Amino acid sequence: MSEPKAPKIEFPCDYVIKVIGDAAPDFVEFVVGVVEQHAPGISNDDVTVKDSRGGRFASVNLKIVATGEPQLKALFEELKASGRVHMVM
Image: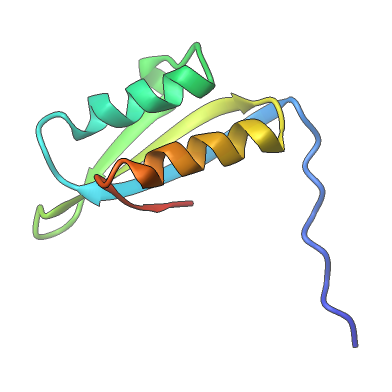
């Protein structure tokens, strides 16, 4: 039995990413700033923020226009390399 293949994404497309990190006063601005470098044109309507129950973590959901795998890979790598981000989905 073979593994099912992941669905192929057709670019460009709307793409939602979720970034989880330690809650800090500037965390949302930091995430939006990094994402904006890779996917310009984010509006406030494209960003939602949720704090964890204990307030230690924050998750930022952003809707971007994805142009291809290289863009997404570079974006994910830069966020993870920052040391402020625990997970990017």
